[in-house]
Length: 384
Image (cartoon, rainbow, N blue to C red; front, side):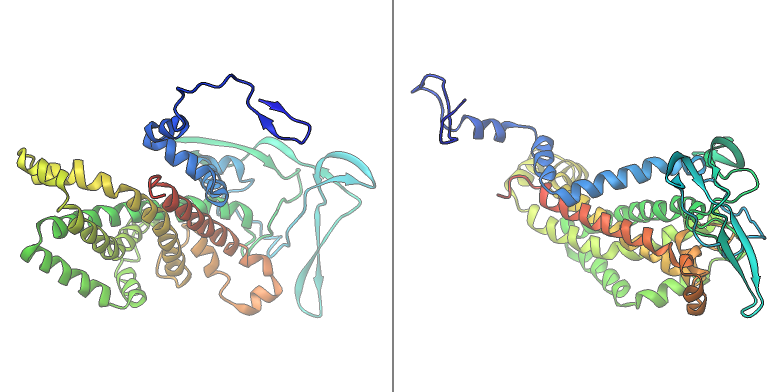
């Protein structure tokens, strides 16, 4: 290619009358399906950014104990409701290593509250790869090394502390392990049930289709929130937090599958009349093989997009139940459990940082929605 004086680009190669004008298009059409999907997905900037963000979040879940400066239930009784502290690099106009100003507390005899003020004359540098609360990497390897810690004799509450003097930032990181995982477990249960019953109803039809549809209609006619509350309240209060976590995940998955089952049924009703399905049946393929090898792959793009859009509903469901005190309970740490402490509006007005756990919920739910939109537009590269 050469650039002309008027900024036009001209191909300097000699003209070939035998060259195919559609060579580039033919090459694109012959590319593997995943290549076409990736090319189209890259053009969806919000979906791509959200996918990278969620991937980083899930990769960091096994090592949040290393990133968090404190343990999830580590208390400091002398710094209850301590405000957020900032990490600085300039002191009196001079550049120095990241440091904090220690918080000093004074009693306000008028409001009977502790008032925290930073000691601006005593900057203290952060410590790195220091020892602190014990945690387990991926739930297996025990360690007590943290990426950064507060200087000796000082505190490091990046997003403040709660009513028991626990670090909100560290608890949000630990809470992500449960709040982000509950969506994956719930959607797995929902998809197994939805695909199983939906494929049976759509492929075989008849009385089986009628029975499954009536079951779906009964489940969808029940009020969702009261049903959540009733099932969650039935969980014994003496169960461990891990057992309650899995039960809540299963409950969310069981209540979410009817919508997916109807989508699968409707798609199978149309696909089972296609010629390639009839050809597979005439060649002796079993019903299970026709469903696995011929019907589901043609519906997989919709399933993947539905999964990305359903996970936020699972996260919000767990948050709502834990916020109402019927989901996960202390000492388990999730974003819903943390918001349970922020129910008092007067407390939020005085200590607004206790409502910070709302922010990761909003950001993660938006990221999943943007990712789902991008996948929905990209997983069918031949639609245009």
